[in-house]
Image (cartoon, rainbow, N blue to C red; front, side, top):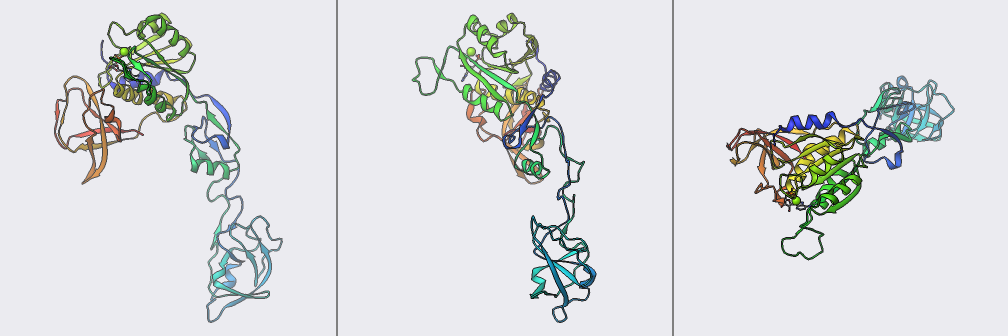
Length: 403
Ligand code: AMP
Ligand code: MG
């Protein structure tokens, strides 16, 4: 098994990840989706000059010199309410009562807050001067027509939904969610809730891996558990290849009962790489099926499966939705010495905290590829270079944030 480095492996995956396909999605169902194309504003937001306050729309010049002791007296000629503009235009010495969000009437160039006025009948006394433009939110101030509201790849969350709705968009060009099938291999696997026989273990990957796919925007096709048998493996893989991405956990190493690679080969899946200089995750496999399905063979050890999913599968899923595939990263210092084995790069599960002069990382505990609790509470993966042996306290490492 010739090992390639993490970045080379990831680049090979991204190079083969198909571009997003757009599908129209109504805004109400768009939460959590990615935009397949940029959305450009068709109209200004706000769509008209409107008041930021309840008060009176006036001509600013009329209020010059106004004071509590010597208020300026204006004549109220109408009212502009939210949704019901006033037909009247404001002339010298005149005012139009106005509500927050109501259209500023013609002729007015400022709004006096109601708190700075007192009214008797049609008489409006203004006790404080206002400058031109005061308390007016101008047309297009937030979003100008023709401007890009959101770029392609943007994740649609609450703020994005709000901004899209504000511009009047009812349907967005969302990237089609990649369909992911997950196969779990191993004669030893038993469902949680079932009592374990000798040598059996509970299938944890069936629970840890699918959420990694859905949190990357994918849709789960099937999740299937199969024994270590060549024929069954090939049949299940054949079904799994109907989706966009197939993730097979376990059975991808060099053991006598590892049937995944031969089965993939027999189905015409072309191997791109097998073996990454990475701990945990050395026997990671990546290939492409004849009709383009991306196939990942992840090592069965639960931490290896999760880490290699985050490093290789997640970027592919993001790229397939037009999103930035790289995880957010930072540089941080080790809070304490770390014992590392020479030879392979290591993805250390760490907690990230602010410290004096920068971020500080602490490994989440024992780092064995079977120690699933090392994933709990991990903020990121810190990368120790292949050639490193012992890492001293304070060593700077690059960290890719997870979750
Ligand atoms: P493998 O990659 O098939 O050689 O499996 C490596 C280790 O991961 C073995 O100890 C397996 O029992 C374990 N393993 C494989 N699949 C799973 C799974 N779905 N859930 C939990 N552990 C697993
Ligand atoms: Mg196995």
